[in-house]
Amino acid sequence: MEGETPYKDLLRERKEPNYEFYSTVKFLFVLLSVLACFTIVFTQILIGVKVVGPSMLPTLETGDYLFVSTLAEPNHGDIVVVPNPRPTGGQYLIKRVVGLPGDTIKAENGILYRKGPGESDFSAVVEGYLEGTWTHENKILPVTIKPGHMYVLGDNRNNSTDSRELDQFKIVEMLGVVTDWSIAHKEFLTAVFGFLQ
Image (cartoon, rainbow, N blue to C red):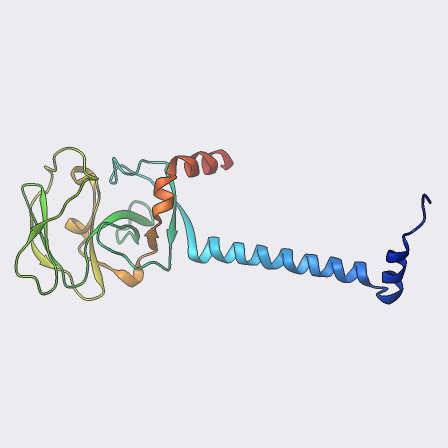
């Protein structure tokens, strides 16, 4: 019959008179928990950054949006975001890690060489991400990376302010490591976040 409450619902209302209230409270609790987790992940663990400047060309361009993981440890070849020690320019710099604690690096005629801890000979670093010839400040005298530090260079070596000028950066002061998936999907992220601005 139309308009009558089904028997099953009447029994539930009699057994649990506050069922709808508790169901709503449970839903709101789950929703707030998901929002809290989302907020923590995207403000403390994965932080969005926008590339400004030509120092990472051709890998990254001005306006690219990326995510940085604050939990990741840097490895050779990773792109990291570090604080800018200069009073001018932006608050952060985005660069590529070429030397980690204990490494010794040098450059001659635009070719980067690295010797790991305990190694006796330098070997050329394969840098497939570079484009063109590295001519500006293309010589780096041998430097050993201090404990807790890293040596970073921009991919656009001819137009990058990096460890050649600013020295080594403390790993603990790094904002984070750019995630591989955000680099792979930078066009999509840039389109989405560019649209939302």
